[in-house]
Amino acid sequence: MIGIRKFLCGGAIVCAAVLACSAAVFPAAADAEESAAAEEEESSNQIQTYTSGDYVYSILIAEDDENEKAASIESYVGTETVLTIPSELEGLPVVRLGDNAFTSNYELKEVTLPETLTEFGDFPFAECPSLTAFHVAKGNKVFESRDGVLYTDDGDTLLRYPIGADPVDVEIPKGVKGIGNVAFACAPHLKSVTFPDSVETIGVSAFSNCESLESIVIPPKVTEIEAFTFNSCSSLRNVTLPDGLIRIGNAAFAATIINDIIIPDGCEDIGQQAFAETKLPMIEIPSSVWSIGYCAFGYKLNDAGQLVMDDSFIIYGTYGSEAQRYAGEEGEDDRTFQFIAVDPEPTDSGDKNKQQENDKTDSKAFRYGGIGLCGVLLAAIIIVAIRNGKKKKSGAENVTADEKDETAADEVGTEAESADTESEDAAGDAAEADTEETTEDTADE
Image (cartoon, rainbow, N blue to C red; front, side, top):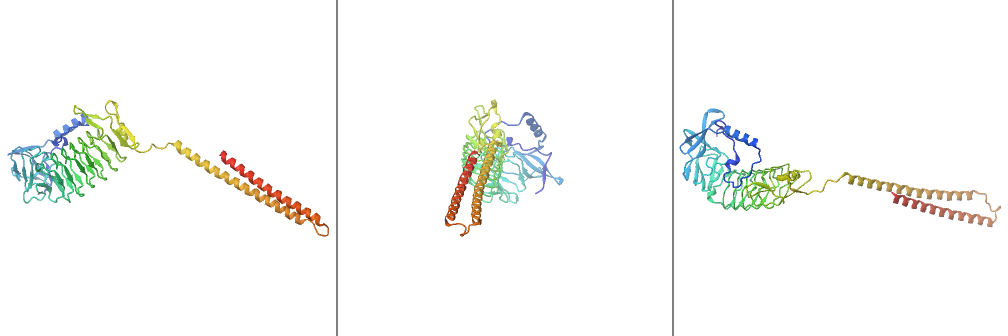
């Protein structure tokens, strides 16, 4: 496959222009200056085209050799129902199909891609309601057909499902990693899709306007829901998002009947009108979300087809989060959404100071209690020492049997016993008094 570039640097993709099968049209958030700039840029990037039979094509030039040229089919004006795309136009090999080459072709039933084709744009077969099968010419090393479904040659990406085959319950084969842009868009009877865990990407508008699709479980490896992925799936009620999801694109679930959904922790970005015109009465937005686009939640279409705020819509989130900012952002007539915090209000400094004072009081009481106990013990030690001192003094007196009679000895013994008793009583009174003083001090504190 050669490296190629468009002649005159062909135009950029504009999603609004290629999503022909999307029923819901939402007002743009860009201001007049941005719109004018976009129109000017689009005008300056117009592709120079040529006509050969029923085909309109542009010329591509190899990046490394300006003499090597090829053709890109930009549109088809014929009416064939079974079509084999030519391998060359005016002597130039056909290597690419442009973004809208066969968009909105209602007659086409079967199409065969040439062996020279190496790539195509984002939406070349969008809204082809009669298309029942894709075929790939022998020798093509980039694309392959499996039961009429178009894949990349390695089977990693399911590029297009022929919606004219009227899919109802689809099981994506194991090993598929990607679902292409508008792969199933506008399939009228598609009711369910089962994804293998291998799927990592789902393209722009991949399931838009699948009016019968009722529920979907996004596989665990998908980290981004692209713009318009499930837009206008008017029967879609139940959606399970993977834990690893980081971004939800513009209008990804707009114009559905989703009435409950869990935005996983870790999600960071929710695009414009992502959940506009749904049945959601409320939403809880995790604190990980740092960007919420215009009219992402809580907006519905009025009778005039204009997005207006739903006054009853409630937003749950954490203080200081993007959810609180979005809820408080003034809409029409200076109205805002009701915001309910899922976390407690931050504790003020008064509560903290009060706790510190309580800690100080407990510490002081403990300290004074210890001092009181030490005082009681010291008083008891002093009293015992006095008593022992009196005993030693009595024993030191000169009281021999020759100089004192037994009566005097008995009197001395009686006095000593009386002194001991009084000393013990005094110690008990002192201990009791100290204990009462300690109790009073503790109560005061």
